[in-house]
Amino acid sequence: MTTESLRWFKSSYSGNGGQCIEWARDHAAATGEFLVRDSKNPHGPALAFETAAWSSFVSAVRGDEFPVV
Image (cartoon, rainbow, N blue to C red):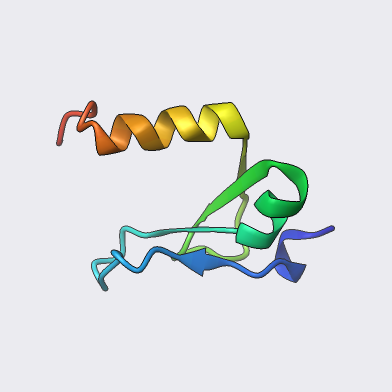
């Protein structure tokens, strides 16, 4: 499966600021692997995360554990 054949989704919280990511929701549901890519570069690489790693990342973001630069 190539990343071009996947359906990609952007968060409803994303504005038009150009700092958005997209994820392949159907792929995650089918495989448990979360694919994430830069919405400005849809033909570029996608990062793959296992379910536990993605859940930890989302929890850290929600918990405001990353400093704003």
